[in-house]
Amino acid sequence: LPDKDEIVARQEMLSEIMEAARDYYEHVNAYDYKQLCKNLIERGIRFVPVNDRTTKAKWTKLFAAPISKEERKKVHFEQYRWHLFSYKLLDAMTNDEAREAFNAEPKTSVYLFEQYSKNAYLVENAHLLRAEDFDHKFIPFSDFYFFSPEGKWTYIHTHEIICGPYFYKLP
Figure 1 (cartoon, rainbow, N blue to C red):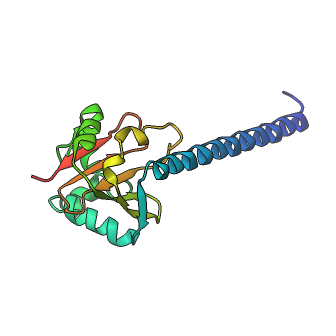
Figure 2 (figure 1 turned 45 degrees about the vertical axis):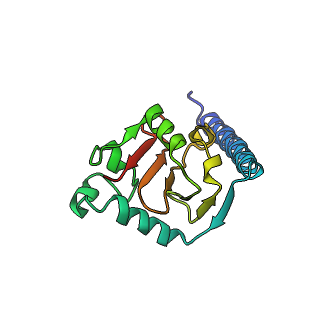
């Protein structure tokens, strides 16, 4: 367009549209996420808050211990812990095999944390959890890390459609 004022007006309108669409998307995702939490609680699953730093440190000590700090840095471990598995530094089950392993694992309680959240939980009645509970499109930027209190296994549901989920048992 040769009219600079019209170009600016259209760009401003497009920005408003994009912001409104983003707000709508965030609203829908937040609502759907709350519905998931409500559903899990109604099924009898209990979420007991625990210290997130301690929980994340415990996960790292258990599952990243065999990987050197140098190797962790190469795979951007601090960005996404699950890179230990996507970069095949640890051999984990993936996709449906991982989901089935998580569902089949006997569990009365599990630890749960999200990559970028300060929330961490000891999940009671964990036998009621299903891998499919976290296979929703409304959790696009969440990485959920589950692990047994005994530290024998971990299940990670990533935000990436093409990566994971992963199930890993310590040897």
